[in-house]
Length: 313
Image (spheres, rainbow, N blue to C red):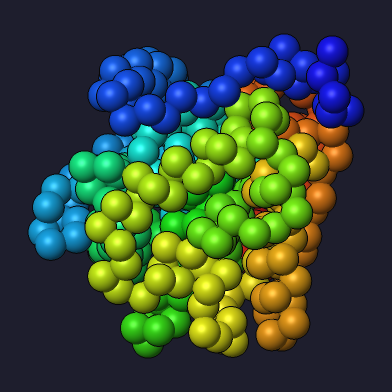
């Protein structure tokens, strides 16, 4: 029996750990990518793939998920998947992106950013910034409202999303209106209480988190360290409003809470959702009522950010 009071919906995952050993990553990513590509978009959602120039003009794939019934232009959620900066997007992300697209409604642009350890920091986050620029510049062509572009991400994708907001501000672009951070990675210093306590939690734990940072920061920090570790930013002013969600039994819990509170302290509007009985990556239990309620709160946050009311949708 686990020592943590995990909700029954997630009990079947309590002995699973996400493997991120460097030697296993090519095999793991082949399996994960196959599962993601095999999964069909949600009913009522259309999928479009395209290649754009990424960081340093390297090719970068975007996948657009859009509701079949909605009319252009639509708001846009740029989505950055989790996976410890080293793993491809899990298949359940496709379901989440489909729900965001359909229920908000909006277009969700998935960014297939390059992964460590082959492409360590800052390549992945610079790919994301290149995607933001391209989406903004080509908004009319792809049916997006350029004044309504948000970014979202889970886990390591949450770190990329928060970093993208910092880059957007620092580079005087101001193209983002909102950030949706799901159990985000925010701090490479590994000094919170939950990071010290949760060293053996399901799916993700503090030991794995340390390995993740070693892989991602293999080349050090050639640019601002905050673009890897957002809690280390020198300023939190003038950032977009945020929705931050954390899981109870997750080593990342406290750094997510601290990030939300720090934003709020600096006059950034923040909604913090502290889910209970949950573990990192809990949406893998797709039929869980807890997952369904979290999706409702996320969609409501997106609607508010995009100024969408029920009559509009």
